[in-house]
Image (cartoon, rainbow, N blue to C red; front, side):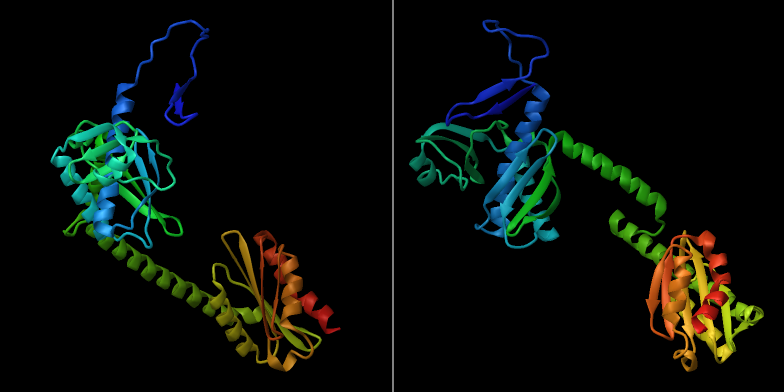
Length: 362
């Protein structure tokens, strides 16, 4: 394994991690991994085309703000004030792939005086980079000219194809594009083809594209899920409301106050509040506590008719009961809510409602 770095300007040093001991004076053969080198060259040359394409489509204010050239992908950061629209990305992708299909020669001009590189070749220089008196110019036809010391393909056709994967924000005023070339593009299109086959198996209606077909199918299924959820909520509420008639069997008088504790599982908070109103109306005057367990959680709501709130408050009732199911809560004197994490204790907690109310009324 090796790593390349520049200890001083103009000098490249390679750090080698040997697989076996080596000693000073020994001769070694340095061999470049051809596949890795060629993949890196394709991605590096593609960044030059991408830079030029961004400036052509978005404007000359675009400047490179960082980049990563790896064997399997490329990443390019650039200055721009807003997100790049999908249509703009497509225009850029079309433009730079036309340069690939033209198989433009990639010229490398070495030992060019810096003034000549800037004024004659109009080469792009990176902000913040330090350049010597003489520089290396990489020129791709009339499309791209940059100062660069990296390795490149001999012609753009060797890149294969440039596929932009995504674009996003890095920081304020800096955007990032990620892309693949060569075998990376082939792998990407194979994955897309596999996904297209899955989409085709899920959708029956014809559409302009697999993406449109998938969106339509997801919208249809989402609507169906919402419809079924509404029907389930209605069924649960109907079942809970029908239990109001039998709930009167649990009504007890405590110090002259009617008290009712009632359990109905799998109701959400709005449905429980509706049920509380129904039960209070049925009692006319009294205290009602409803408990519900769902997905390992407990919901409790206490309701007190307004004629009794001076004697007993819903918040004190529900707060005490909530402790028994590992929770806490509170609210208005006439209506208060609580939650808990121990559904196993819900029946016991509801059974204690009558005792809790008795203690609070004393």
